[in-house]
Image (tube, rainbow, N blue to C red; front, side):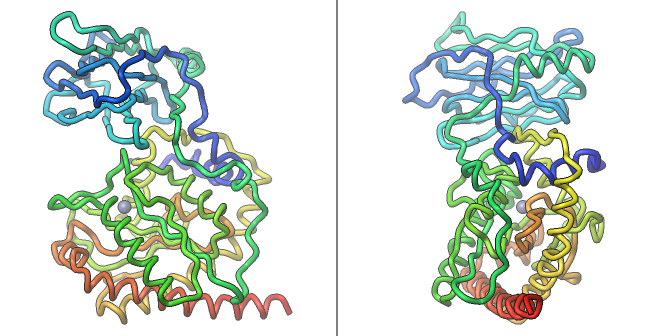
Length: 423
Ligand SMILES: [Zn+2]
């Protein structure tokens, strides 16, 4: 599965100027009123996504009517359905999706109070029918949609008629924050503003092994690391999320910018099917991945955003891209130096790292042009040894200590270089 390079540069631009447009759009399909206080449940046995001739029929039987919204997204073509408080338990049962036109399905919590279902389709469609009705037999309601194939012109019309749902309460920073002037480089005076970004969350749980979810583990570790930084002194710490909520990758960067971040650390513990990766690994941004595994990780994170229903299809602007490339020219060596400190200090603190501890890939969350950024895979949930370490509070404490030490040493060296540049 190749990265769609055509949109990669366009995405770099939108990070700066229109982060908030990611989830813009108004639902045009009707919301059905229901009792918002009780949790509605899916009846998976009476629900499914099936072929209806050349069309796709989506049938969702639920225990009671709830407010819902439907919309379409492009690149890749997707149907996005948002519900007020609907539990999707059982949706992953075999046979739920039988239509060959559906490439992937993802469901889960978007934000507290709102759940989302995303169907990725093999080509453009329009919503030919959509409606919620009371069930003929038994209590509850049935939401029924029919998706019909269309050509590109028809898809453009369908997108305009049914843009992606705009979900209330999705916590994104103010637009002004995204448009703020580039951050002034830190000088060593005053606290270092560290933004910790626990990976995944909400509709995107990340890796899962032995009942452990990457999304939960990363929030817990980010809190521990925040404590360690505050105890050490000289740091101000901001987390991009503290709960099990979905935060789009570009919104994580805009949270960092709004916080006036001197440095961004994205925290992960992904799983790899091959199971060969083991040990902490530090990633920095590069257009070309250092190896296939790094490329897979970066692409998987972007794919999680797509499957959560984020719009990555915006258009680029050449001038803004050039300005960002200039900013990155200064930031990239600062990020590389950060990675070297992280590798040295984590190895000293924990005694072990990945056999190639500093790698590169095109991670969206690392693309802020003016904030030195690194993504740390604390370990891989697919490695039994890493999993045991991640579960061990004493090991995590050593790891946090190593990261504190790396940030402190980096800040001193970075400020010294800034002073030289100013002379
Ligand atoms: Zn991850």
